[in-house]
Image (cartoon, rainbow, N blue to C red; front, side):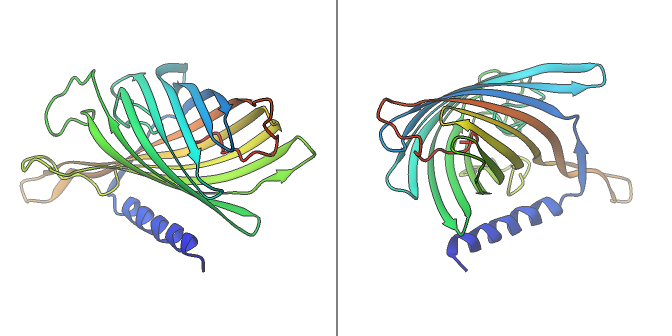
Amino acid sequence: MPSIFRLLLAGAGVLFATAGSAQRRIVMDPLLVPEAQAEVALAGNDYLLAGVNFTFLTQSLGSTYIGGQLRLGYEHFWNERWSGGATLRVLQGEDFAGYGDIIRLPGNVTPGLLLRHTGKIGSFTFGQRLGAEYAITFNNPVNGPDSPNRSRALARLRFDVERQFSLNEKVALRPRVAYEAVAFLRLQRPENSLQERVVDFGSLRGELGLRLSPRFDLTPWVAYQTSYINTLAQFDANGKQTGGGKLNLIAPVIGLDVRFTFLRGGDSAERKQLPTQH
């Protein structure tokens, strides 16, 4: 079995084992996240990216705007399998919803670096994306080591698999499944702070990309996002735990990505293009 596939299975096993150990779970109302992207093709498969999205909380009386994100990125490909780049996310939203690509992910300004590897097994393309970010939070109403929205360093690891089906010379379908785990980097945890979970955030995403031309993509997607929280345990007079402890806060998300690709004069329509979830 290829080493990439073994790594995918091992990572998935650890992540789902972490999720399964939680004692309680709360499911939020679904959220809607439309995003518009502009991708500028550079030499080879390199690109510049600019995107903006908005988050809406659905309720019985309609939807409510709770946040938005500006996304900038650059990625350079060394060869067909390896690439790396830099990202910058600028975010605004309600404190209770958190910020970023995953609900409750902290940070108002978040610079980052990424390393990506892609490979093929038969007709399937497997990808791994490793990211390191520093989430800088400005509007933090709660100070202290246990504040969920304080500035934090993040490590992000994503596994994905996709397959492309060409319908004609221009139109193609691109079904894809991805799982991403995010963990706070805890190089020096204050002695009196509440112990955190191993994985702090997770997102399982399924999408169906529709490439209508080399210049335009439309990608509807759904995701099952989870915040893994450790709350202060509560006990009764007999020492039996009655509340608190491990909590999974789950947010179903429905999204739609619209991408416009600006090709240079000499660029080929066959250039390698990433999914809209860069």
